[in-house]
Structure formats: structure tokens, C-alpha cells
Length: 212
Image 1 (tube, rainbow, N blue to C red):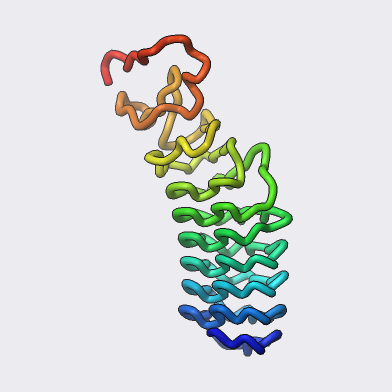
Image 2: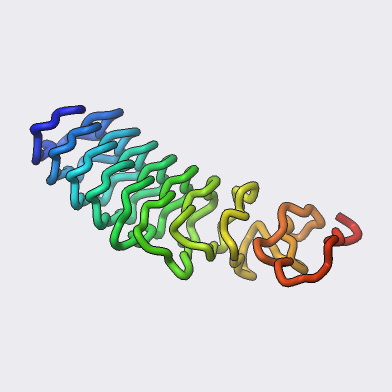
């Protein structure tokens, strides 16, 4: 990484992964062709490539690593292929995309701050695919205030209050909402308050239900 004169590159077919910091701080890089043989984009692979305007991630890539595209400030759009199952910590942080990408239908985990401030606007709502099981803290901070999760979502609920509104569907397999509280489905195991559930109440005290 760190080559400030490189402005385009074609990665040869047969390469399996783009490793740690491979193109980090290649500030003149505008175009890159990634072959279909690549299955992983590792941490900081394109960190700080501030001239990169677009990139095509081939179908077959399963993971996008920590800080992989962070600080790619010229990047306006990106397509995430259906093969991606994990998006790492801060992978797209501070990219300021003009168009927020469609999240792939096989995505399972979105790690901490993966898309923090990655979008130059604010989405009215963001619907996660049913495949998503876990989002870590502030995964979509600054992107939306309303997160809609799917039937396989189970957490992390520790930092869910960075969103003003959360929608959990009735068919969720692991969680259920009752009277403003989130429970482990079929139990009295109370996991969290629903974001915004008690904002309009005049009560100064919330009563935890009997049996918890």
C-alpha cells in the first residue's frame, strides 16, 4: 500500500484474497478490477484510497474486512454481491456514499460501525434481509433512525438505542415485543427496552412486568 502514483490496476484471475493493507493509502487509485476468484477482502485493503469513485465486488466474495473501504471519500456507490455473509468493523465508515447499497440476501453479520456515517443522507428506514442474525453496536449509525430487522435477527441489543425506532416482526424466531419490552421468544427473559417505546409517556417510572 501507500503508492501515491498508482491510478488503476487489474488484479489477475486466480487471486483468492486481497490481504491486509494491500492498497492502503493509494490516494491516486481510481479504478480497480477484482477477479471472480477472490473470496475475501481483508482488513484495510483499500483504506484511504481517497480517489476511488466506484468498485465492483465480484460475486464469490464472502467477507469484507475491518476498515476495508474506510476513508474512501470519493466512493459514491458500491454493489455488495449476494455471496457476502459478513461485513467487518468500520468496513465502509466515512465513505459518504451518494446511494446506500442494497444489503445482500445471504448477509448474516454486520459488525461494529460497519456503515457509520457511510451515507451522505439519512434513510427514513433501513430494512435488513431476513438472513441477518447479528448487528453490532452503531453498525448503521448516522444512516437511519429506524431499523427494521428480519425473522432471524437475535442481537446485539446492548446498543440498539442508537436508533430512535426499531421494528421486530411478529415472525421473528428469537425475539418478541410485549408492552414496550423485548423478550427472548417464549420466555419471561427480558432483554431490552424497545427504542422510543416510552418517549411519549408522562410516567417518570417504568414498571417491569411481574414474572420477569
